Length: 486
Ligand SMILES: NC(=O)c1ccc[n+]([C@@H]2O[C@H](COP(=O)([O-])OP(=O)(O)OC[C@H]3O[C@@H](n4cnc5c(N)ncnc54)[C@H](O)[C@@H]3O)[C@@H](O)[C@H]2O)c1
Image (tube, rainbow, N blue to C red):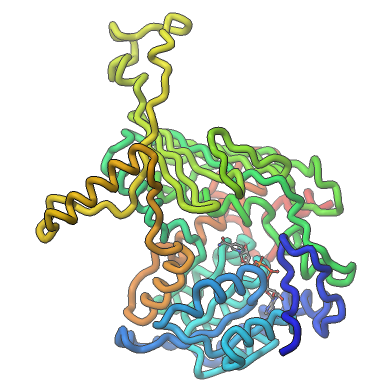
């Protein structure tokens, strides 16, 4: 077997293969194929496959096995026994071949996704192409009657928001899932349950950050620059908002139980002045209908995170409630802590002027101490439930004691990425509804677009504005994008 081709990953220090048969021209041309693809496929008309028995395998195709796609295939999809990869498509030959070889050469290879969609063996499609190609592949797949798993963020422009909603309404029985894997994490689900049960009181604020110390640039020859470094350019990418913030604004939406009403932000290209035109640092505030705020930060010059000494990114969400807080992250591995708020307990519930209130400097230092964190244990069993034996109960108590003493860290039973893929396959086979469904994905994409618009136009943008955007068929990112592009 020949040497494995080099995948263009950020970690990869090898120059990308510049002599590929597929160059930038093809890349950009492929992006413009939306209309043609839709026209070619619309004659098939929507059709709905009947839900199959759990023993039936889902036969799926994969479009765009690049850095993300290959990771999902290699680490997870190939090990999921209710699915079978029957077709793979990529415009970049080395990536296509590497993915096909992963399955011993069995899947049919395509360089045009429209051909893959015509393949009658394909029931569902995984879409892991760059953001600006998500919509055309997803739309064409749905119109060809295929269920779709598409990476976040789901769509790129306001016109695509309206367009995908329409395609979904015309094909309501086809499953659409978006790659927001936190929704499939036991930690995040445990946090959501605690919040809904009132464990930290009323959630009023969320602080989220994704801080890195890296340029995000992948090595590429000049002719492959756009194809390899698409993330750095507005014509293909939503920048930090799309690539990182999308995960965390989704967590805020989920935990608060609503979508934002407005966003205000400041962004700049202040350090990595290397020709990119996406912001290299962003600071945003989202407002929610109940007055809740999400304060968001993503930078590329320092990954420090207070109180955390683990490898990986400075990435986490802090959920602040009136009775306590939850700190949670999925990077580099799931971790969640709950803190009570002793200040509130010491000062009394009524801090609006009651007897216990002391202002400013008169607040003693003892009231300022922060409670010890308690790990979130995602898979706690109901120990009083029937069928829990004595030994099992003792073991569970011991485990909880060790978590609380910090002797043992709780871990997820399965990687949320594995769970999201398996869950999609299961939902297609059994007719279920994904946790990160099309509406979750569209709202998430709207937050990305409007956050960028707010920074571009230096103003507060209301989420209701999306309804007026993109209706004339324009496919640019949002009104205001032209200004910033110049
Ligand atoms: N959920 C997550 O945590 C997560 C993490 C990383 C990336 N992603 C998302 O995954 C997507 C891909 O990111 P990536 O880093 O893998 O990008 P990438 O550039 O490494 O891979 C994209 C692949 O798509 C192929 N491609 C491009 N246009 C195509 C077309 N028209 N038809 C077929 N193949 C085409 C490219 O050749 C490449 O192999 C992005 O939307 C990104 O936001 C999600």
